[in-house]
Image 1 (cartoon, rainbow, N blue to C red):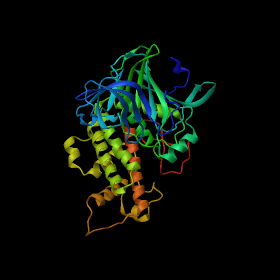
Image 2: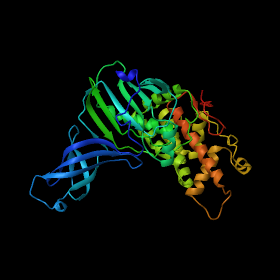
Image 3: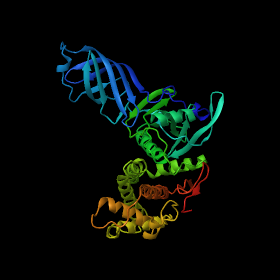
Image 4: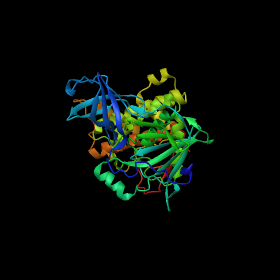
Length: 433
């Protein structure tokens, strides 16, 4: 397998920022109350509202109807070579051309036996990695980890440099930044039946490490160097922007490899997969949201759910009945203590003396802020937070969420402490070591 020695190269490596990814060009059939034969293109639109669209010229109807606008397109489907029939929505017909989009979350060919799967990643952060060959050059950009009986390799695209990253930020754009492969550790061929699940788990792991939704648009399976399987996925996706998160200053790529392997292993259990997926939504809302009130509600919700997962389901500290009998603040504080996470307010230099003197710890101030949003009172307002104070309370809650998830997956490595003035390479070890 050539990718062992050389960088993995996407078939879309020449595509620019926000440029659509062509899935298929040629003839296809649209089935509705009539059979419409078309010639056109099926393509993937990147961005926060990613979609799979089609545009084609109509060249034949299986009837003599010339009034296209009279045709009913309810329950329409589309068939292209190499893919299963897909459910579609027709937007409009104009001048003999038809436009629409695919309703299915995933479009794919039949499952098949493959030697390896290759996939692309949109808007992943530049992270350190081991050396990899690209033509006559060598660059640092590869990470490698395990999922079940599979090995996953992810390579940074050779052209993903500071200039491209700057363009992505300025345009809030989307582009393929990395490509990866999945293959069996024993080198044997395998069926593609479980690939969709593995792709989803890798996307979730990437999103938590980047602090925004990182999507995987496609996967291609190869047998004896021939493409025998293909799939495209509509996933949550975020336009590129810098987010300061728990990985921001990590320079040792072994930490990333360790993290990806652990979180993907944890998500093999459907309970933890769904739980982490839900928490990811609240985490990304809190770290990226413009509405501070909504952010603190997301944080409290995530912390309460994490408390139940760890204290009841994972470590059986409380029964479900005992857990429900406690105030949320008690459960969250118990969880943070178990994880050895610092709850003192003095770790946040920007907190005023009013906050430090009026609240016992981080859980206390987060709960107060959340309750002031959810249960506003005209009669009793004890403390009015300034904008900077509200933002730092949110950062404190984000820090708790990040560390608890790392504890949940049994991560034992480095992380970025957002309350210290660190530069790249300056890290802390997780507190439970």
